[in-house]
Image (cartoon, rainbow, N blue to C red; front, top):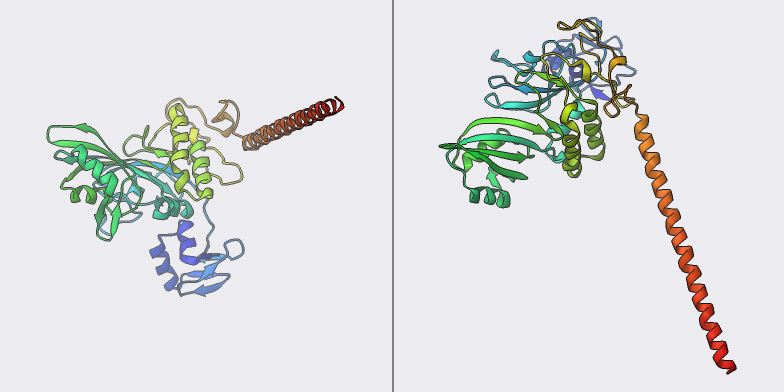
Length: 364
């Protein structure tokens, strides 16, 4: 069951707030009945939903990484008419929204999706998803200050901010470049932390979110999740996050390299793969059509496996891995049993030898 206004937002009808207005205005029907009150829940598999007489169906879930430039607000709509991150993705046919926030004067990585579960997972503090920033701050940040922050943290009102990592990576005449990792999800967290230390942040760029990296994505461009990225984040979600964060992120960084994906102002055909039964990602609007440069068409059959480089990715690979692990466990068990048998045989032989020796002594 899902709340009606949330379902309408996921279907791309409007934002949640606007969807609530549609409901109160009596523009929404469930199975032919007008709904004009909030809080109603629906079953998308059974109920027929209409807005202004048009049947509403859920969109397939899509996942993108965006490099937000400075000057864009991290919202789907802005009441003051300012540029938003959604304006950078006008070519995407689905209604996507940012998972989390990044203040208007900051730049860097943002996950854009229509998957509410993923958005919640990436932004809720209890999940422990780490965000890595590179900050250029005014003045000299001393090494002793960094050590103290890592040890004791910095209190911002009722919340104690304790970075999991903080390192000075460069110095200029009157400025310091600091790489810092946080996971509390507090509004303007990094800027407020440095302000409490007496340093104004002059430039702030988010370079990582959990297993995702800004590397290879030019400013103002976006790309789809790679197959590897999708598998890792879904696996992480299933396990609950937190303790698995560092391990999974490290796996992805080792793998990334040339598999990063081709950054573009439009969806990347090379990253357009179906993700088995767990989820699916639609083809970009230009899939199957000639591109503007080489005139070649893109199709699923041309995509290579992220592992072998030939053919499509098959989820059977995971089953094969499980079988291999199972085989190793069986071999290990047989080895242990064999070792026990040998030890037992040795013990019996030793006992027989002692008894034989005693008998001879007695006979003498």
